[in-house]
Image (cartoon, rainbow, N blue to C red; front, side, top):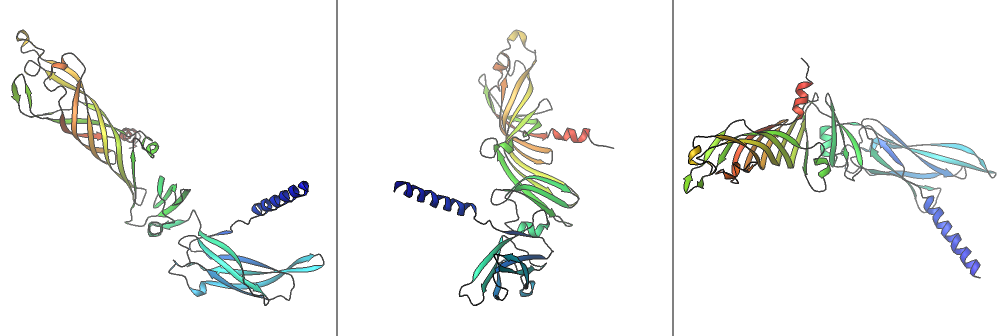
Length: 359
């Protein structure tokens, strides 16, 4: 009894598994822009005398160019052979989708049919999607949420056609080709941070630029019981590195493979600085060494706010400090005191552009 019970359970499990494995996958047809698509539906018949009542139902509800005469039903019968002394036939129906129909997203195309005078309709269904790899207009790309990439990781430009690689709304990798006409511009926006979920892209390539801060403004300071008013210095004595911590970037693509980049960023400055020390601005000198001057090395660091156009940056340092590297510098009146200033920076890749340019 137990053996029979277990055999029954095994047979049921095998039957369920078999049904799951034999589950029919969706049939998908790709509709190319400006081309006619013919979709076949085959209905199997047992007798050549069987008649079929059928109609097509389609779902292109978002398509303003959908016309009744662009989808039509054609029919023919074809004998396909004998099996078990019975003649089997099929009827193939064709849904002809005209050139001017473009599904704006995944659409269903359904054949409803019943054989002879059967009471209920049966259904055969396919999916219609826009074919990948087509060249879309900028209006079509921007105006269609299923076409537009949620995130763009790479852009290749050839004349007036852009090849965009990235991720669609479902998070799957996708490629789109977009044609730019005269006067059209495609803007790709992105932001990234040094830490967080999208930090990998932030560090590839490393977001650094060479920077100099020729203008430093120091607030007033009290030194040796004397009050010194704010002062400003200028000069190209410091060239350092600026590292972007957070950035927001807009890449604008034009016809004829032209591109411009606008970037706003918050960063960190590290740069060497040389300051001249003497008896009036340090406690180190004595009355016997008055008039002696000494240039000392400091490390300037601070936060930066910058706007970059292509590879040229305009920088504001809202707050900065000078860190001493010598015992003499520890006695400097501005040691550890904040300052602010203006600077200019360039991307290191500008040098490769200059070196690789041809006359």
